[in-house]
Image (cartoon, rainbow, N blue to C red; front, side, top):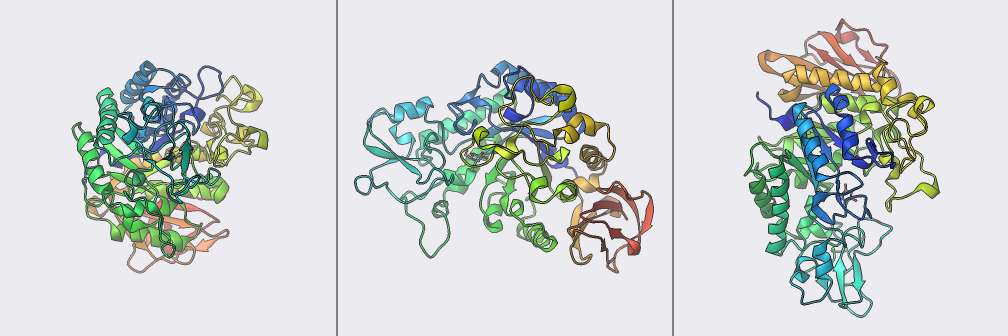
Length: 516
Ligand code: NOJ
C-alpha cells in the first residue's frame, strides 16, 4: 500500500506571525521558522502549511493579499522564503503555501485600478454592481465576519457597490472573468516554479457565485455559493495547472457543513487532493457524533478519496480550551490513528489552550486572537515575557500557561503532550498500517470511539478513545483477537506490555493504540 507524501505523516500548520520571531519586532517571521525547523524534524511531520506571508496591509493579518508573488517585509524577503524552502526540503519536509483566490486586498494594484473608473480594463476583475435603490446594496448578502455586516461597500468615486465576502479591505475577485482565472493560475505557477509542494486554498467554495446575485431563499437555509455549479470545472482547471508539476498537492478550505458536498470536491480525483472537513471540526465532544461523522465520511467517499482530519486552525478556539487538556491529548492520538492525513495546528502538539486577550489587546475583527497567540518556546521565568518567541513585545499576549507548557520544558518531560505527539509521529512513520491500512469501526461500548486499522499480513492496530469524564470498560466484540500489546496511551499512568482486551478499562478521556 504505497503512500504519497501528503498521506504519510502530519501536515503542520504554521501561522507565521505567531511561530517564532527572529528580529525582535514582536511578530514571527520566515527566519524564525527556519531557526525552528529541527523542532519539526523531531515531530516527524511530512509538511508545513504556511498561512499567508505575502505583501499585505494586514487588515486580515495576511489574508488580504496586496501582492501574491512577494513576501511582506514584516515576514522577510523572497530570499528568506527560498532559504526556508531549501532548508525544509533538506530535512525532508515539504512546504505547502496558502493560496487566497477569492479576494485580494483593496490595496492590490488590480483593485486600485478597478476602482479608478468604470472604464478601467480591470473594472471587471471584481464584482461591481449598481444598488437596488440609492443607499441600498445590490442584494442582502452578508460578510462572513458578523462585525462587518453587509458584504457590499459603496464606492463614491465611481458610484457603484463592490462585493466583499469578508472585510471591505478584501474585495472579491470575479472568477467569471477568464482574465482573473488566468492571472490566479499564474500565481500558482509562480510558486510551483519556486519549488513549493502544494497549496491550501482559502475559502475555495466561494470562487463560484450565483451570476444573478440572488439572495438565499427564505425557506432554504443555504448560502449563496450553492447556486453556482461551475466550482468543480474551475477546480479541475486549477488541478491541471498544478499537475504540470510533479507531486503537487491541493488541500481546500471547503467550509461547507455538509459532508456530501465536501466530498464532491475530492471524489472525482481530478479536483482537490484533500478537503478540510469542517463538519468534523464543529462536532461536540461526543463519541457517537464522532462515530457517525467518521463513518459517513468513509461511506460517502469514492475509492480514490483520501480523508484529512483536523480539529483546530487559526480561526477556531483551541481543542484544549474547547474540550479540555486530557481531551486535547486524545485528539492528537485520534488524528494520527485515523485513516487519512492529520493536520496539526501549531501549538496543538503542546496541548496549548487559548490565550486570554484583554480588551485593549484585541486586534482581530472576528474574535480569533486567542488561538493565534504566539508559541511559548521557553519558560518566561528564564527567558522573559516573550517566552523564547520574541525578545520584544509579542503582537498578542502569550498564554499564561507558558511557564508549564513551553516547548523546552515539555521536550524534557516524558509525560508531556509534546512527548506524546512525538511518540505518535514515530509510531505512524514506523507503521505502514497507520499510514495506509484499512479502517473498520468497532463497537466498544458507550462513550467509547474505537476503530481497527488493518494492514498487510493482517497486521492489526486497535485505537480506542474514551469520551467520558470517568473510567469506561471496553466491551471487546467477539470477532476481535483477545490479547493486545499497548503501543501508546495518552494516560502516562498506564502500564506498557501485553494485556487481555476483555480487561481493558480506559481512564477519563484516555485514548490508546494497541497492537492485536
Ligand atoms: C479563511 C481564513 O482561514 C481566515 O483566516 C480568513 O479570515 C478568511 N478565510 C478570509 O480570507
